[in-house]
Image (cartoon, rainbow, N blue to C red; front, side, top):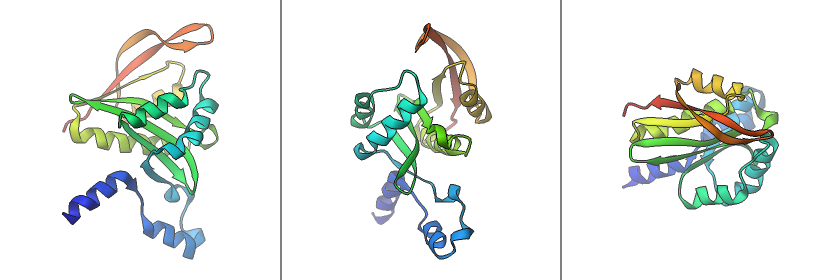
Length: 181
């Protein structure tokens, strides 16, 4: 019974208390990246999450969309440092498939491994119950495409006119990853 409780707690928050202890006792021994932690997103995160979304996209998700994702119990995670949300990831799971709906890192925090950390965590969750993981990405988002490629995603198609764009619509590349349960 206690093991099940610990597993559920671990699913709620990914955290290493020793890292925080050593950071306080030996401040120069622990890097910033090691102090970042992943945890489930909650409603109190929404102002920061929406702020990151608006700073990152010309056509951002609304707060209502994020709230709906929480209400639907999608896998919604944040990466934080102290009280600051640095990035987030949202994934739905159904019928042996995982779908990455949104993965975003604050513009000031990009290129530090936060997106990779979130994606690795979501893939590990998907591998529990899914055979494949899918996502859509703008062809113009070369940094995201490079991350997905490095994680083993393959292009499986194109969705014409999927994204809203300044001059009409932009296609989406459809990517998939075999999860092999």
